Length: 391
Image (cartoon, rainbow, N blue to C red; front, side, top):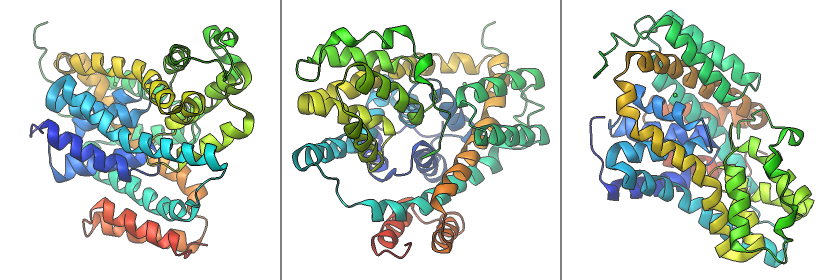
């Protein structure tokens, strides 16, 4: 890391990123890469990709990456401020939209704006993959590993499995062969993209034994926190894996939401710039208002935050180990491959017209050739969608 970013700058920057990060985790990762690797040059591309890889282990990886950046800049306070500021706009918007929904039983007409953001999001992801790939893919084994990871992502293989296997290949090949240079000596002696969804039949038993926790009419804050804490402990593989887990728990098991409310909650979570995990915020609001929304969100994210703290705390020690460096050297090209696969998967449901393809191509040129700030490109997409040009 080249620049130590202040807590104030971290908070303001992640508030901005959290407000414009539409399009899912990989889109926000692209925004973070542009801000901290490209613009500020506060992180080397390799270190940034390490944070993305570690963030995929449990919970929403974009939030985890924000924590990694903040921790590497200002310790645990910086990590907490970065993750909190990044999530704050989405949580606030979800609470507002939930209030509208449960008061008037309708959704705001924002679909046109969101449709305009889709092609720009594809361009953002491709731009990030291009920028990081030029710096990280410096040998043909790394290129092949990137391609294999992209294929695995297209086949909907769980990202955690892909990254672990890539790390094992890194151990076998070594950092030098993968183009990462000479390994350091030890100091003293790891769409929206559609990911493979978990089957409710395979849920852990403790998620299936929640019927005794009460109905929506009698639920307490402690019960809400316990349920969402349990869900957070098995939050592997991204937001879309979370949907069947929450459906089994909240709709089938506890009857805290009815099926239509659950579907509408997914729609509302997709209207926010944050992860689809803010579905927990919607459910918490349904149960206990703002207090329930904040409690459910905090409980769901707590297990991932604890794990990221441990990983960040031990990161320097892990980096000094040649074996860990070899492992991470395999993870880096795999992360780039997963980013590419996310762009391809998302484009299938986004670039369905020549207007959308043209908007995405223009956006990619503005980002890569003319170095436009992402916020202006996103604004261009939103304006295009609002004027119904893409229809």
